[in-house]
Image 1 (spheres, each protein chain N blue to C red):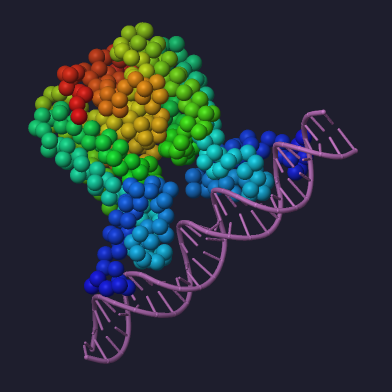
Image 2: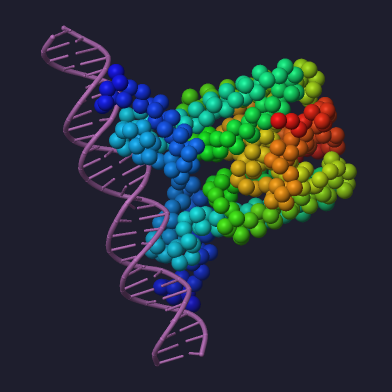
Length: 209
Length: 209
DNA sequence: GATTAAATCTTTACATCGTCAAGATACTCC
DNA sequence: GGAGTATCTTGACGATGTAAAGATTTAATC
């Protein structure tokens, strides 16, 4: 099975090679030929398993979601308190983005253009979102989060975390703040900011053109 | 001055050509050679004005920030009520991201890797952030937003908006929600969500590993 | 105003990339 | 064991970013 000509499990080997390139050399080094070389096959071999580069990237992105999901599950299991869980999940999210920056970027930054063509990717994405929804639901049941459409609230919370992470990755956080606070402090403040506010806004004034 | 050989203002013409390509053909069509062709010069001409492709992209990204800033200013001037201003700015932000999707992506999605090498880009970025800070400060002065470090709160709000926009652009918003609500409704709910919450969380519990 | 230097643009060339086609090799199923 | 299929290699092509060398225009100096 594991002869020389037939690799045996080239498809997964290519995905792993791609992820390794992302973590060690960065996005610009992620070429099909480079991935093939790292997997020890010729430059056109990937075409036996992926229709084109997009398809390989989609598989790598799906794997990114999978790894992220595992991290989130670990965070989720770290405590029984619902709100603490939510915070732990948030911290796991940003930690993954920091540790595996380019894998995270590939997973999210729209490199996968027509997601619907890659059901594996869509499925992993849904699994992640499902976890967030579950954690939010627990907080709602406990009364430590706003009542209302759980999915809406989950999206909102996810978006807030995601936005912070991307500003961080894109070096868009103002340098004045970065000199003053650590990333952990900034993120902690951000979480506190959107999870607990004494408020203000007449709700009928919010949705407007 | 405007002879045939010497273009006269090729640098800006290249930037404009790049932006036009982004809006009409999309990111994958943004090659140096394509930009040069659209500007009517040979494929190596850009190297008289830009060190490499990254430098041209940085200039295009800076222009993206500039255009975004103009939109935000218009929104800011649309009303005198501080909170309404904040909401108007938020809507202008997402509208720009929808109207000029690929220009927005280039501006933010980390294509500019070493921002500090492109001072023009950094300056435009600061100008945008400054506007958000000003709007947030007005709300604080009026008492319609949480008191506290204005920059921190501004970053937090920006991150929330930015995150929603990026999830939207990346098709990461769950399809179940997209079938149920319009983008405007979802965004409106998101704003309401993180701008006005009845809360919950013991503040000493938020910042943690 | 002529000469020189500098800036701008063209042409040519090269390595790398994604992709395709044709062929070689290994596995599978009857 | 032979036929068919899946997998992999080799070779080729056009497109891309970039460098080098030369042509052309503008600017500076005298």
